[in-house]
Structures are given as structure tokens and as C-alpha cells.
Image (cartoon, rainbow, N blue to C red):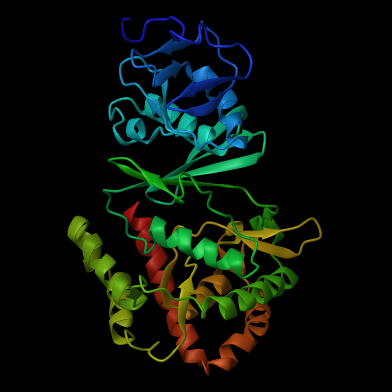
Length: 389
């Protein structure tokens, strides 16, 4: 018998076109919907190969007692399913880890097949691909179980923002556990991310809610944003894990400024630049003693979700999240809740927002000076991010 020749099992004959039972080593294995046209038996009868189109139907056997493992054959592009004792294991990881760096489209399709096989989902309709921030990107796809977002983080980059994907995943899990409406990373092979030589990848279904557009910002909505953020901050101060690395954002901003100066030497001669950088240096310790915790770091109004009644119900895009001084979220939230058309800020909105977060500010004896200096430094921070794009 030649290996991978399209023939039936020597004892059982041709594979059944409906659910049947394959017996080997004294064990029974339930098989699902394959025929002699899409199955090739290996010589030792321990492996059968099924075309990629059969992936989803084979996934249905998960209702039996099997864990499925799929391996893409590098040369044939077919699916090999190993029968090992009483398990059928499903794994595309080998192919994902050794993708063709020169063929991004092929790699993307392989990742999508990997995800769809494990999550047992069907993609329907077109997909939307876009960049996310300075370095990350995502794909949004409609599926039979909801709208799926796949996040891609390059391993080798010059990212200036503070966040990283593994921290983001843990932050989302923490917030969901504490009752917040945030995206939930999906488990694939008992992990919440997977990776290849160039990227770290994870995915989640989009959550209910509509991003707040600039045109809707108002005094009333600024208060609602502040109220939601006040609750968020009270939970965030409880966040800690042994993997947490504290980041003093003032010091971090100065490090970013040096990187920008190294690549844009003329910027350091700007009088505005000198003032902002000097101001950051002078106040580097101003937040000592203020609460630390899970900092979202990008409370941009479009990252805040509302329902049909205008109520703030969720927060998204934790790609810049880190463990640091929580006052930065208050400063950024005040900025984003108060901007009007034409990059003009409303002091009424600022006041409305700050009244809503007063409980948090007073609980930790945070002074207006600390808030104000942090606000100015975060203006410098976002100027650096924008300049570095």
C-alpha cells in the first residue's frame, strides 16, 4: 500500500459518507462526513487527510469525546488529522508559526482558517482591515456568531506607546470579571493569544455599543463620561499582578522625547518643545503618592461606547494600557470629553467631567495642581505620538 493513496481502510473498506466508527488499538473513533473522494489513508492507517473544506464539519465531532488537532501539510495544503489513542487533536499552529513572510495575503488566509477552525465559526460577508494606532493592525469580520476583531501586534517595532498585547489581554479579563462592558479575548488552544515569528495575535467579538462621535460631545455627555470613568478608576486601582511593571509616565515621555530628537534633530531647537520638555522634567515626581493601577491611556471619545439613549456603557481599545498613575486617565478623559469642532476645548465640558470624577479625586487627596500638570504633560505625550507617526 503506497502512502497517501486514495484507497479504503484494508479492514473497513471505503470511509463512510455518513457518521461511522473507526476501530483501532481497541478504541472506537467517531468519524463524520467524509468519502473516498476527500479522504486519503496513510500506510499505517493512523492518519487520514481531509481537504480544508471539511474542517468545519469535522469540528462538529467535538460534541463527542475528542479534542481535534489539525495540521496543514506544507506541500499539499491539505488538512492532516492524527488519530492518537482516544483523541483527535486539532492544530494549525505549526503552519501559522512558519508562515511565508513574502506572502501576506496567504498568511492572513491561513490565520483566518486557524481561528475559524478553533472557534467553530463561519465567516460571512466582506472583511475590513485597518491600522490601529502607530503599530498594530486589525481585521474585522462578520461571522455566524457575531462581529469578530482580530488584533495583530508586530514583535519587532519602534512602538512609542506604553501598552503591550499580553498586558492588554489580562486587563480585559480583569475588567470583564469586575462587570465592565469590554471585549473578551477568546481562548484558542487554552491560550488567549497565539504567535508566529513576527506577530502576536488575539481576537474577540465586538461588544454592544456605539463609539461617541465628536459631534455629540456636550456638557451632559461629559458628565456621563466622567461618571463612567470614576467607576472605572475605582476598579482599576485594585488591579495588580506579579507581572506588573510600573511605568512613571513623565519619565517615559522624556525617553520618547529623546528618541524623537535623535531622529528629528531640528525639533530640539523649537522653543515650545524646550518648554514642554523642561516642564516634564521639573514635575517628574509630582504624582508620587497618587494611586497606581490599570491605566487605559487612551480615553479618546471614539473609544467610549454609548447606547441608543446616550448612556455611556463601555470602553474599548486597550492597546496602550499599562500599570501606572491613574491620574493620567483623568487628564486624558478631561481632554477628550471636552474637545469641540475645530480643536477648540469647552471649559464647561471640563468642569462637568471633573465634577463627575470628584469622588475619585477626593478619595486620594489629589490636588488641582497635580491634575493640571498631568494634563499639560499628557498634551506633550500625544504631540510626541503624533509627531512620531
